[in-house]
Amino acid sequence: MSIKEAFICGHPVKHSRSPLLHGYWIKKHNIEGRYGKKDIEPENIKSFLKSLKEKKLVGGNVTIPHKEAAFEAVDKLDGAATKIGAVNTVWFEGDKLVGGNTDAHGFTANLDQHAKGWDENPEKKTAIVFGAGGASRAVLYSLIERKISKIYLINRTIEKANKLAKEFGPTVIPLKISEAESALNQADIFINSTSIGMKPDDKYPFELAMLKSTALVTDLVYTPLDTVLIIEAKKAGLKTVDGLGMLLHQAVPGFEKWFGIKPKVTDELRQLIVDDL
Image (cartoon, rainbow, N blue to C red; front, side, top):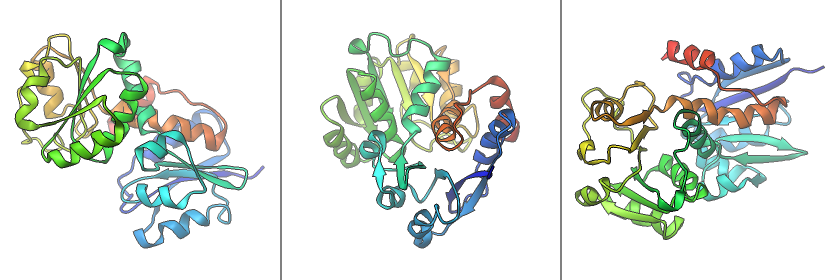
């Protein structure tokens, strides 16, 4: 039996924790498989993806800066990738290379695991998404899929928020940072999709104390695990979910496509990645 080999490609890619994560599952399930890093320069990404069959690779993950190029290079897209406009996972269906986006799945599965019931009575729920970059697209897609009735999209440059709101429909309401106050006290869930929080001296442009006492706060940033947002939310007595679970859960669908087994996100796996942060 031939060894199945999958990969993560990016540029740079050396800091990726995906090999640690997938390697854990390969070992756990006694799979004849490998998962490695491929540092691919932007001008070579399309030819690399076109050569996967020839290289006997069963598929892989695509990270920065190749997600949009992969979107163009695959033969077929899944629904999430089509709407989000980026591909982070590729696999074969027959001879066709399929591009998917599992970030949305990762986002909701993380909340389902650590904040059960967060999306109950969605018609009465209001969310705030801070940031209108690439990561926010997966979050908006997730919230709309879960039928959250009102989503405020707050961004420093209102033009970007307006553009996304137009694309994702009337559920999404764009706001300037100066207008955030009016939305904060309505929010049931607050999501940071910006890079704020990666540096210890990062500051938020609004007060989390304005959120309802029952609000849930989550951050897509997971290095450090306790970001500025998570620390401030805990001080305010709010329920929090860190961003690491999104990384872990988004990896599940790809692994299942490549190796034929649906793995579980366990405390042991989480600790393995935490120890490596």
